[in-house]
Each structure stands twice: as C-alpha cells, then as structure tokens.
Length: 97
Image 1 (cartoon, rainbow, N blue to C red):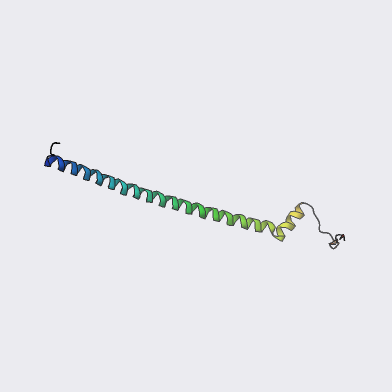
Image 2 (image 1 turned 45 degrees about the horizontal axis):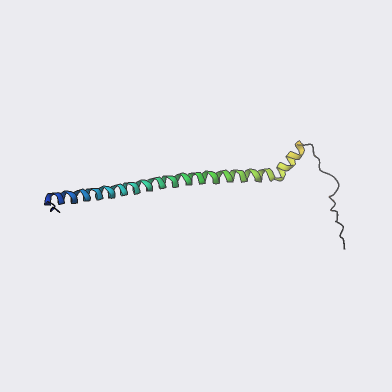
C-alpha cells in the first residue's frame, strides 16, 4: 500500500467532518420542524375540542328546553290534546303464585 499523503488525509477528515455537521444540522432542522407541526396540530385539536364542547352544551340546553313542562304543554295544546278531569288510576298487575 502506498502511504496516504498528509493533504489527502486532511481532505478526507474535513469531508467527513462536513458530512457530520450537515447531518447534525439536518437533524436539528427536522426536529424543529416536527415540533412546529406538533404544536400546530395541538392548537387545531384544542380549537376543535372547544368547538365540540360548545356544540354539546348548546344541544344539552336545547334538550332541557324541549323537556320543560311549559314546552310539553305547548306541544300538547298544538296537537289538540286535553288534560283529563279524571285522576290517573294505577292498575295493579296480577301476581301468580
């Protein structure tokens, strides 16, 4: 084997060091980019979560409104349903022994 010249050894060392620094810089850039994307996704998901919670609250309020006695009476009136004068009788079921 021929001995490697000093200049060639330096060139190989500098080339290796340059490649290492480029890989390190690429890794840092990718890591930073991933963090930005993750933060953006977190922000979007939090906004969606808030929107869904608000929608659920509106629906629950609407359900409570629909169940109110006043609303039920209004619907019954619109359907021409009248309240009976007779008291409600609860029938007992026969028991078998």
